[in-house]
Structure formats: C-alpha cells, structure tokens
Image (cartoon, rainbow, N blue to C red):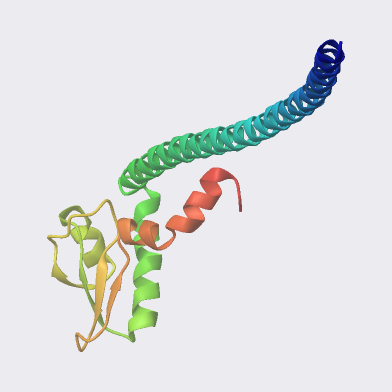
Length: 185
C-alpha cells in the first residue's frame, strides 16, 4: 500500500507538473503569437507608409519631368515661330530696299551717319544703291556690300565705322523684335 500511495503521489505530482508546464506553454504561445501579430501589423504599416512615400516621390518625379518636357516643347515651338517671323521680316526688309520709300530712308540714314561720324563720310554700299548714294552726294568707297539694304559708313579719318545695314540693325534690335513678335512689348 505504501508503494501504491507513493505511486499515486508521484502520479499526481507528475500531473501537476504537466498541467503547470502546459499552462506555462500556453501563456508563452499566446505571448509569442501576440508579439508576432504586433510585428506583422508594424511591418505591414511600415510597408504601406514606405510604399506611399515612394509612390509620392515617383509621382512628383514623373510630373516634374512631364512639366519640363512640356515647357521645352512650348519653348521650341515659340523659337520656331520667332525664327519664322524674323525670316519673314528679313524678306520684307529685302523687299523694302526695292520700294520707293527706300531712297528716302537712305537719305535719312546718310544724314544720321554724317551727324554721328562728324561731317564727311565714306560709305560701302550695295551695287544697286550706288546711283542713289551718288545722287545724295556721298563719297562711295566701295559698292560691293552684300546686304538686304542699308550701308556701312566710315568717318573721314577712317577711325570710326557705323554699320547701318538692315541685318545689323535687325541684330541690334533682335530682343525688341522678339518681344514685339511675342506681343510682350
């Protein structure tokens, strides 16, 4: 009987120990499961935030690139339009040199050059302008100028030169012409 009671006592101790271990195991399992769920939630939340941040950056980069491309296209189109209008203006200046008003313009330009360069001037003009320049009483140094119109004047002592060719006048006023063509006076 003593062996039976000892065996019963050992069996009860074993059962209590097993129950205690099972309870400890269940508590640890619940703790690990809870921590795993928290870490999973944290990782998912962090991933969502990072994905949103990356998506925002990519959207901003793409929008910036698209805006830059759009501005470049507008700039290129504006430049082409300006170049086309300036080419048309040059053609009109060439046509002006064949008009009746051109001789009056040459007269005014000659008076301006004489005033600026101080008295006697010598000019380099286009071959077709030679008769008009002689008629104006201007000394013609050369008539080999290739230009749409106008002339180059030199002071009597040869130290000063004034370029009054249509091309040079247009080049000097190009920014004003561009602003005018764009309507931004």
